[in-house]
Image (cartoon, rainbow, N blue to C red; front, side, top):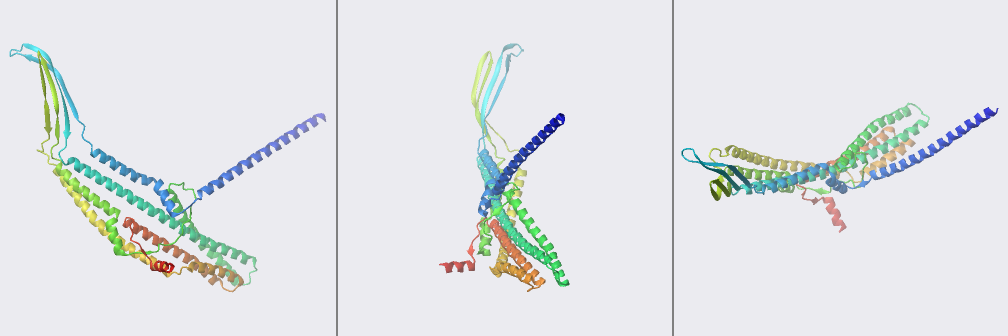
Length: 456
């Protein structure tokens, strides 16, 4: 009995020890879990920072990786311009050898050494350096135009994605709202006793409508997710971070004049300016190719010593130059002329394309604006109220299932159509901004001008 009592006491002590350890482990685990949850909420709060469209654009212009590439292109072109203005390095040459003097019979009269040193500086034919620097200046201009074009395109892309994200979010919210309403209605109908085939079929119809509604909601959420991922990539944020845009989702309230837009495009389009700079560069390249055969001059002093008994010293200057005897650079001149003709043709084609694209985009913009103006401003709110009213009335049996579903569909379709028209309107606006170099001539719409006059 004493032995059994001791073993029982030891076992009891081991059990109590294990319980105590488990309690400590549980407390420690709970503490770690609470800490992780706290940090997780903090990370979610920071990752869901709200943005307006202007701050998104500023973030993209400050952190976009591809933009740094174009900025480096400008720096590289400026480096070449610096190099084009530098003189050639001077050249130094020297000679050393033995010197022997013999008479006519071959008898050695004296021996010694001969040595010389010469310094020369090459000077280009007048005009070569100026043309080379002018070509380098055009390279800088072309690189800067490319940088501005990318900045404008990046700004338009970020703004366009922001509006697409807002549109998809609004559409997804509307689809989720209808889905929740339909789910609640289905649960209510299931709790009621089904009286007849009609009620059973109505229940199945509503359940079937949820399938299409879920597919539509999935498309909206996928569109929103794609816009979020691309926006995060453009502004230099991790792809996993969420995004909240607080800017108002509304269309541009301006009407455009096609003639003014075409004139602005022909004067301000950055690609056209780039084509003009390319043409001017090729003109200078033709002149540089023709001048390439002109001789460069090397001028400098020299000194020599000859000693074989007597010491002789010579001082003087040297002049050397190339003679364009065989090579007149005909091939490079012909190539430069061909490049100039290409640049001229590309400029003409670019002007025609800019003019036609502006006219096409302006027409599409006006059609989208007309479509939006034909929709009453409060139609979405009215349809939302109507969908809620149809839900309440169907529960009481005042309307049939066809009318209930039709009202829900019309609310969602109207929301989708209005948002798509708004996004399309912004898309045409940003395309016109690119085509006009960001200098769109603005004319307030009639409704906006009338509202302004009324306010005054």
